[in-house]
Image 1 (cartoon, rainbow, N blue to C red):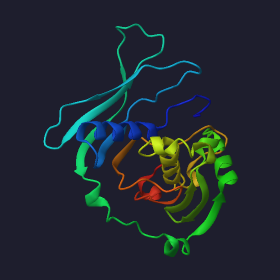
Image 2: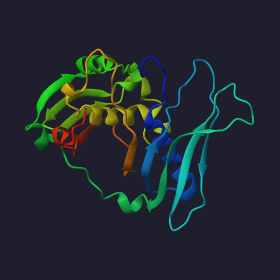
Image 3: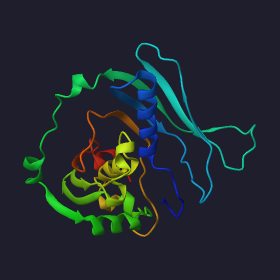
Image 4: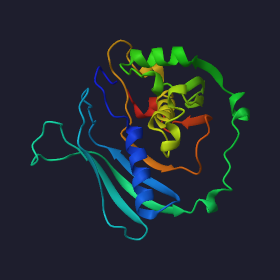
Length: 231
């Protein structure tokens, strides 16, 4: 919930894109690139919102996609609104990426300072007008060091049976995006004003293997807030 309205999370568009890539290219570790979030999709309560994903023909191993919707009560002739767009790129087969190993973060963790546990973190996010339901609270702990954030995530119990149905469950991937948002210095967010930051795009997403029930996320901000004058 963003500022009192139910909004489809950006992570859901990425899951839709991964499903589209598999449908077009077949099984494999395909890439989702240059994703832009163009318009938020507001979800009405107890009503279905017509949604469609449009993909162009494959050229040179890639194709573009758009995810669109229109209001539940819209006329058949009403225009579709584009919410997200990007590129799907054919990747390697599952067998070719089985040897990819992620770095163990324990060596990183000792250089970070524990900032928040789950209740404290989501309380602070609520102060930014971002209210997350139980299923969208996968972060257990946050550690910070300068403009880096390290987080431990755990799939909420209410999602355990649903997770295998997805490439990356949107609630879990949204948790990863929350980690990135946690790198923004708190002094840049005016408490109690309802101001907040939301993602506007994703450069690249690759899923090498199914996710474990517990995992780590490491976010690094490459912008110097003071020099760039971000506020």
